[in-house]
Length: 322
Image 1: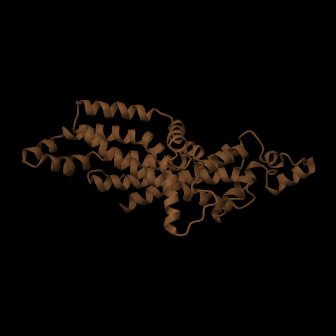
Image 2 (image 1 turned 60 degrees about the vertical axis):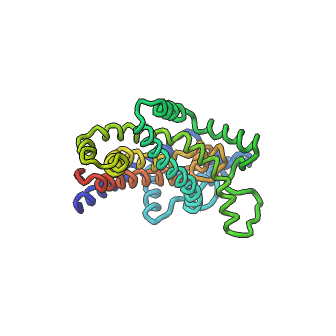
Image 3 (image 1 turned 120 degrees about the vertical axis):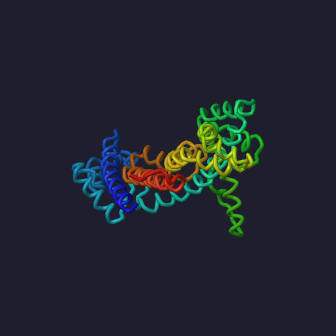
């Protein structure tokens, strides 16, 4: 086990080094100039623009900029934002915290509902209920998240006026207690969470159903039934746990992808998270912010895959860690 962990950690380190180089190259080779965006509308002359480029280090060769970028990272410095005129670290951490609130709630709901509905569909294979759940899952999975979000806004915020249209909190609101602040956050959280759950729950329904159907015909399931165990106990004690391995893989991929894949939802609902931060940074050519965001995404993906390997071993001791 220790040898596996050490070998895995070395692979993770190499992966992150490759990510750093790719991350830096992609954004610095993008068309457009951040200094041009900063100087827009200020009528700066060529000398002032040159000073700006020198201030941000954009006048140096890419190799020199990359060395400085890595050195700063080793000291915990994510850089200095072109558009916000402040260190990148606090900006990204604040956005990451807001995204984690949205992602945590939606991920828990997606996994729990997806597994329960998938088990329900598998136990009713071949019935109209099963067919309806499969077709419904495919339909919702094919819908664009931003379209679902706009539809929810129109129905529940514009027509019915039940929920706020956008944002994380009510503008200029005064909260007498912590609970009133949490309640306001919960109201703003409903629509973006529902938009993500409606689209994303389908994949867990289909994966759970398919995996459980394959597990139910295994020999050990037949043996469990032959022992006279109750059908419910056979299903939840023997069937569902053994059908969870594909779900674990899907969960690790979904959780890591969702942290960086909320751009559509956060843009539609003006949620001040990583997705909206990336969207604005791309428009403004804010390299340091983009690099920090995608570095965080890469670390999350790598750690999620590592965690899924360990969970595999816990769920199924037959799996060897090599």
